[in-house]
Length: 362
Image (cartoon, rainbow, N blue to C red; front, side, top):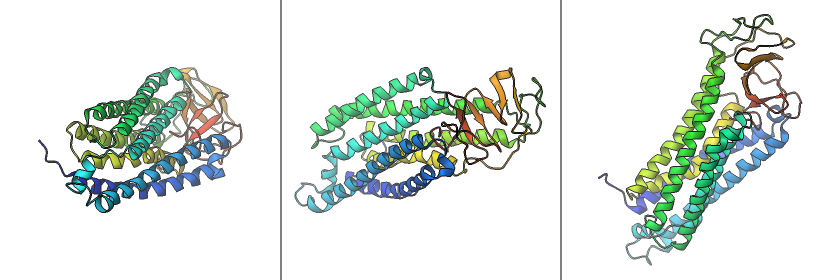
């Protein structure tokens, strides 16, 4: 059996790790505020940007409250309750659940999962059937999460490894891990599918000179690379959170105090990971290089192959596309800032929405 650490040492390590991540969270959050308040990024989708900004702000405030409660509990165990608790800090942190902080952690986790599912919904053209498995998982996570909060409140002076608490915590961890894996796979799969018409050699079967069935050779390999970078961005981000959650699940099942460290870290990661994806895309850090389309912006033609068509210089693949060197229309039909290399989906009216610049952020 792996050697464990004492509860007080785990608590100190957890608060320290969360403090580091919270510092990163602050930088990422204010960068996100810049993106969602800049007309260059939100023109044509102001309403959705405000909603996402409000959503991210709530998660940031919850994470801030979590840090404040953690520091308060640290002082409580090592200062105010040190002498009155038999056995000192190691026992104090072993026999207290801290239900308020745990409730914030669970709520932030649920919000992070719901945001990820919303991305699946958007990137699949607002298809509820595709999202159905993820939504069912979210409902299950919400149920077990609320039961965990109630169990923590009832057994506030008990150990987190109490069977009445541990069973609900385990169920919550398992469901959120499955949700993350499922949603991340769906998003990455959709982006990869959109990249397939762009061959490694840069060819795309959208017609040459407006003729259907031809091969366009004006692309460079960077167009496909941009899609693949997005795939890896989504996969890596999901892997970070899922890996940390798996470690926490294993340590809790083994009743190890070391799991507390991962709990503190996940309280911040549940909010940081969704924001980092938006920030990297919003600032143009999710892709490298430039490529040019061989078609003039004014040319319009359609192709029956693979559901692809050209419209205003944009190669559209079902509801997902990559645009380069064109001005994309947002959800209100207004022109964007001419962002190049954006990744986006079409809304119900066929207008282009660039991912990372508004409500369609991956």
